[in-house]
Length: 134
Ligand code: ZN
Image 1: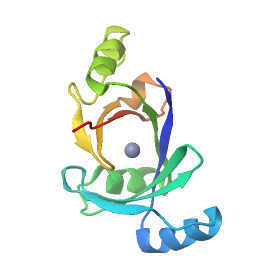
Image 2 (image 1 turned 180 degrees about the vertical axis):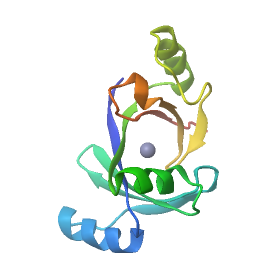
Image 3 (image 1 turned 30 degrees about the vertical axis):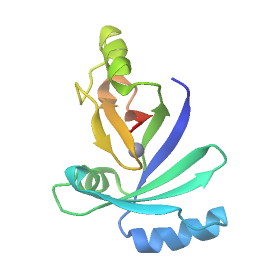
Image 4 (image 1 turned 135 degrees about the vertical axis):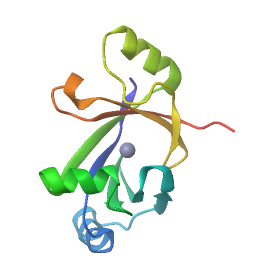
């Protein structure tokens, strides 16, 4: 794993949170993006070499809606940058980590992503992601 690529934060109202984080980080988000497959609306802030990803649910079945219902707003996941998400899935599975995704899938911000099950990682939802090279 190469770096902490981003930290995902679950929010109820992304417009309000964009304003809050714009003040907190003293900069505006550099992009917003809907990821329909995950049922999320996202926005991204660059902080040095790491990003903050805000996530708002777009429907009640969204994992973000379920997370907020159980735990409230707050840190949702930590994403580690890797060279190749599929080979990292293979490595982590080989180490005994239960993966939520067995193959990489397209995520926000031009990334192939996968999640490890938080039961396997001390309650921390871990994402791995790699740049989509076209
Ligand atoms: Zn993420």
